[in-house]
Each structure stands twice: as C-alpha cells, then as structure tokens.
Amino acid sequence: GAEAGLGGVVELLGGLSASGPGGNVIITSGEGSSASGHVVVKTENSPGGVSGQITMGTGTSCAGDSGHTVISTGNSTMGSGGDIKLRVGRGTAGNGGAVLVDAGETVEFYGLGGSVLINGGASQYGAGGAVVVSGGSSSVGGDSGGVFIVSPDAIKTGSSGDVAVASGNAKAGSSGKASIITGESLDGRAGDVALSAGASGGGAGANALLSAGETTAEGFVGGTAMIGAGRGTLGGAALIT
Image (cartoon, helix red, strand yellow):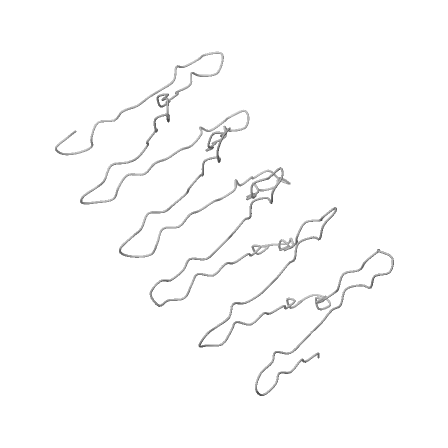
C-alpha cells in the first residue's frame, strides 16, 4: 500500500508470441470433495470516495474479428444449472444505477448492427423457461417503473423498425395467447388500452386491423372478433367511427 498517491499495480500477462497466438492467463479455484473453491474478483471499499471499476474486455483486432466475452455457469449432472446474476448495488442518495446492454455498432456500408437476444431456457420434457421483463417497484408511495418496447427513429431516409408481439406456432396443442391488459386499480381509475396507427405526412393513413383467426378444420367456425363496452352503474359505450 501507499500512504499518498496510487497503490501498487498487480499485472498478470500471458506470454508474447511472434508467430502464433499469445499465451493464456488462467485463474482456477481449487477442487474439493464437497464443493470447489470460489473465484472472487472485486474492488476494495472506498471510505472517502468512489469504489473502483471492474472491466472485462477483449482487445482490438486489426485483421479479423475481436474476441468473445463469455460468462457461463457449468453443467450439473444431479441438480440445477447455476444462475447468472447481474445486479446493481443499492444507493442511499440519487438515482439507482442502470444495467445497460448494447449490441455492437458497424460502419460498413450495408452492414447490420448487432442484435440483443434474450431467450428462456429450453426443456426436453417440461415447459420452457419464461422471459420476464418488469419495471421496478416503489415500496413507499411512488409509481412503479414502466416497460417500454420501442423501435428507434429512422433519422434520414429509411423506415423505423417493426415491433412485433407474437406467440409461437404449435403442432399438437394450442398456440399461446397474446394479451395486452392493464392492471386493476383499487381506489383510482384503471389504465387505458390504446391501439393507434401513426399519422402519415406523405401518403394514405395507416390502417388498424382487428381480425379473428381462421380455421381449416372441417365442421368448425372461425374465431369471433368482439368489441364490448365496460360495465358500470351508468353503462358504457362502444363507439366505431
């Protein structure tokens, strides 16, 4: 340690190679009869300032693809696979910290930007894992956080991206439902459900389509499209204009 200035640096470097891949740096915990040891990478507490950062990254590549960064848990033959948790620490002043996941940018003329894929786990015999995206709760008296699924603006000449909410196909059972539902309000007004096509500035107005499903099975009728007003002591109205 140092009384003033920066503390000493510990640097681990793999070997240099003039004609092949450079050497690896491997840090492995010890094997044990009941459990293997942990590998802990953390910065120390700072009693009077900001704690240090932890940075994991691959180097720049001048003639090919840059390297991958992989965070994975091991397989388990007699139990569940381990979780991967990304968690921001709690703050006592200011806003909570954010979790940012950004796919890569490209400057190639017709190249595509990187995708962000979030998949629930597969299951051989049971139901597959769910993907849940939830806004933050407020425990004292504020509003809960929103959930926004938005395609960005097309700045110059292209079209903005699509937003699709769909369930997958089913071979022998029913396909999943697609539901847009607002929550109930005990002492206030429940939220609206708005389906609205955007305004056009250079052509015909956009369409809003509500279509029930068809069937190819013999002896069955197609689905019904229903529009109903809400019940109330003064009734409700269903308006089609």
